[in-house]
Image (cartoon, rainbow over all chains, first blue to last red; front, top):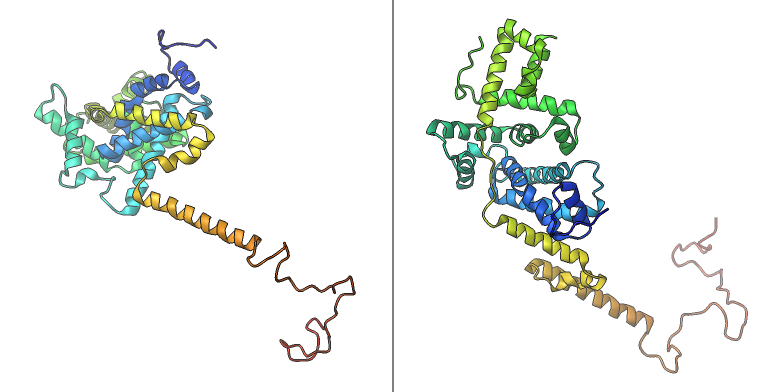
Length: 204
Length: 163
């Protein structure tokens, strides 16, 4: 394999992974640049705590870096990274359940705690958001937060992160059919929760 | 395909995939329930697509890279560095106490081991006390303890191992 140097930066993720495996931390830095926002966004949608989401994203990258020598490329680097983050969010959810502290299941139910509120604002901030749009965004964010972690993860990965069924099945370690049925259940639940908020359907 | 099957597809697939399905489109033209669900799913998808990606706080990327660098340094450290590195690193108070307690226990164990292996009070390399030997000095026959003595533990007068 040809050795790529930093004066001719490699473009593909596979090349960066290969260089990072050879010990080039600058190559791993580029992978961090590529995925940090996506991974953080996923973690933040899952745990609803910006600080914990940063911890999860950081830990996911550190673990990925440590385990890089054992990464064989059976799945894509992105899928592998998401899988690590997904396991960390599951651990965080379980830990919070055990500690019986502020629930991660339905954080937005609480009357606008500073963290939840701040995150909702961040989630709904847009350059041209009208008041109605912002309110709708906030409600959708809240409804997604009220889903169970299993359903939430599928909705976040499919609808918000744009991953395929196959990638999600690989990340969550479950069959394709399970991903589809979870997505169906999640959307039906969201539809129920957002009834009266979404514009009326005119299909009848 | 039944309504239920169509509805499952409507509830799980992206609009682009549904739009190209001729059979589904024909069904939607006839079935009000499926048409309504299709419309609701389109509204829901439009609403979720309004959500902006969440961004980490400023400086997160830099902190993240620093953490990875630390990991990188630990990975490339030699054997002794890995062994004593954690002791040198600033550790939380509780963790440091554990390390000190461990070292103290190890030291006590070493001292005890040394005392047992080299008992005090010996001279000329001959221990001042010796383990009672069953063999008489000078190579005589082993001393046989009298078996007729009453067994102190059982009190029957019979040897303890008698059937």
